[in-house]
Length: 246
Length: 250
Ligand SMILES: Nc1ncnc2c1ncn2[C@@H]1O[C@H](COP(=O)(O)OP(=O)(O)O)[C@@H](O)[C@H]1O
Ligand SMILES: [Mg+2]
Figure (cartoon, rainbow over the protein chains, first blue to last red):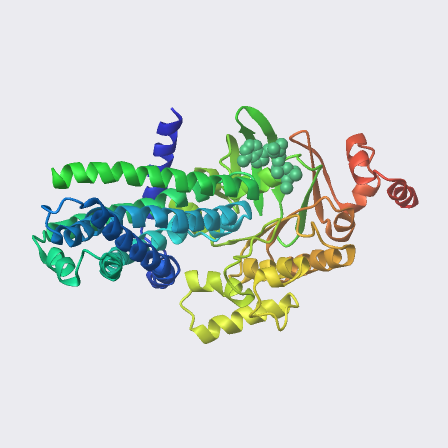
């Protein structure tokens, strides 16, 4: 029952978010600001995480390939496909749900409890559209780029880790990277990223927008926002995989 | 003028406002007074549709707000300025950007014209040399004044103020009160001010409405309030020895 109530209210909010804006130029400017705040600002963490993920996948795979019958180039292939299929989209998505999600929920929540949202409404502004629409559009544009960056950095991390693995050569790694590349994996990752970007912005925005009370509730709601957007990411990861890969 | 007829408002079956009818006149400051929790804020937010009312009518110079659809309400709201209890300045924007914001949204003025207009109103509320500060960097009294400037920058017909001097020292409070009253006369607005500050009542109370138990318990002017024999109103307005001495002298 509670779930149905939340879904209903979420859908209503999204209908308001996608209404025609009061003044397009203002929204355009907001989108650029949000692209910087939510996207470019996340570049650092995406690079760091992807680098270490790529390195560790390579090291673990090498460690597991004890059997001399297994060709070593499969290590590079594993790193590549793990990054493309799962890590650069889903894991990065989960990290961003924590970073961007809590940021959005607490920013909008604080605006709710300090009556800034009421102030927007009183001016005759659709507060839902003004606050949420630019964030959604900004992440829909930027997050696929972050995913691409993550793929490259992850593979680069794997490449550097090759130097710590005695049995593996750079040539093996590169051979693996090129071996049987399925470019549909990239499409699949981008589709996932776009869906996750929508979840990462709209779900925390929902939790922030409907905060009741004070700063304590803002904190509670932003935690809930991160938890539920993470769960939704994992759920949609499964659904999209079911649709696209099987 | 705003005419409220038989307004009812409840939350989850708990009645907050019960059959309120009042006339809020133009060019005057209409005060809503009453104890904390008596429904003053709910009343004000109901007038502007931030709360949906259960029943009743709210006429803005004859136009029934309760019958309006979302789009018509949005249009009417452009004639409304509101000062919130905490100021509600946008904390990601500077003082000047806050005041320019409504101009950005609803006018096609040039950047220069917008800044000029914003600064005119900032000067009017005595804010100088703070244009590029953020709300968190200025005092509570200054925040309220900036919020007033933002509320009136589009020349509203109606101005609503929720406890404009809560959290301010007495002398700053009186400055804010007088500012609101002067601006109401200058711009010939219908102004509604919520307060529980007796200084405000005596300073600017052209028309005073006392809410008690969700009802309009008493209505009158600041001269009439000095001679009232309504017991609940007396308890509220003259709770202390000092206030009772003042009343006896009047
Ligand atoms: N959104 C709401 N939901 C439920 N109850 C509310 C809501 N807003 C206010 N109330 C209740 O209405 C009553 C009047 O509140 P309010 O108008 O804020 O009082 P005040 O006169 O101090 O401004 C209080 O008992 C408050 O708990
Ligand atoms: Mg109040």
